[in-house]
Length: 500
Image (cartoon, rainbow, N blue to C red; front, top):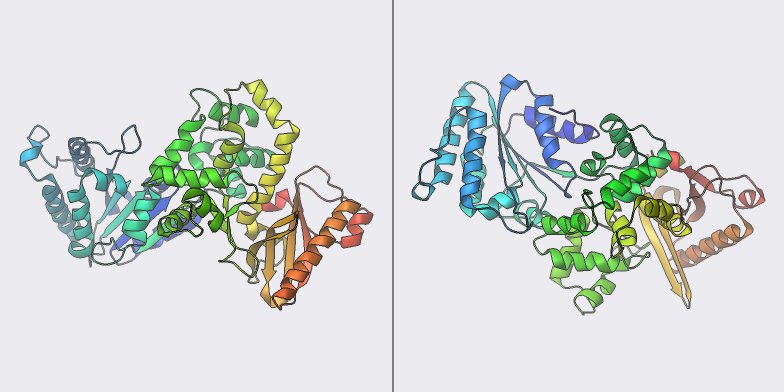
């Protein structure tokens, strides 16, 4: 058993569900490598006395092509092994002709018997169907058995707690999360696992990887691989962060080597991976994001998105690949999509279609002006997902607020503000400006740009017949220099350290 790190909220939810007096069907879902299996396997022995439960884990597997499921025979043998580990006996004779016996019926019949026996002893039965989409692909009969077992046989049995997980977001959404009617696996709890934010990434590196480093280095690692626990597991404290990223992304055996992990992400998450990949490939071409109409014209050659495209965009947002940001006062109509996944942002900019590079070349790239500029853009990108930390620093975290972007195109003047906070009760808007440079000093030009943005937004909100006080907030690497330009606008301030 490993200690569960940085998932305290999820642990508390699981604890409540394990200890209550009802049947539970708990769904854990999220992006590939985010730690779904790890959470379930390690949380249960942390939360329950080992004498209080019996644990049965059944895992769906995938072939090397990351599209097809293994044979039923392979699944049945795995099922037999899992049963033996949990109950100390075989489910069926492994040397028997599997074609002549109904293994699915045997499993659920024996499971009902075990459940009845354990209930008398006041012992919980905890079943974990790991990668349920692949179980369903391997044996639809077995999946139908789970459906009947959950919705009928155990409906009122408080001694059974069922966990299911799946990386195939499209399947999980269609068959469990959004499914309705008698053919739906009705969940009692949905646990979405998202990548870690900066603070938890730092903590995970320190506690799990034994790598203690300052916030700037954590930020640099985060820009390359994000807060994905499995990726972070490969960070070595014996190497510099640049060496670690090189080993992961640019060597032949690296976990995130070039197209390998990129392709796996889409193949495993989605039933139609090429369609989703085309969408993300297109959105990656613009630092300003793309709205649904632009995506529609490019991907399906239509002026408006159809049902298939709208569904794919929802799925990409749901598994943290994309982020949807609403336009100020027009949250739905003029929303834009951005790539949220840090590894994919790094991949599209620095790995895709690039020649194999050595450590020296990667080091030169990271120290180049182009990388410095990209780092500044990515700093702006991650602010949207760290909005709670920003508002806490500004002292507004206990007030209700909304997050928006603002984009204006007048003639050749294209202006976009990636993050605006709206505080309705205070009648206030906060325009955020990100500057990831050492000891940034505001200039006369900065003052002019800030003034232009305020006037532009003021004109925009006036057209919407609204009135708000507008403030400027600089989110910088470290403290702003208090020069004459600073005194001119007296901005709010947030620093990198405040995001941790």
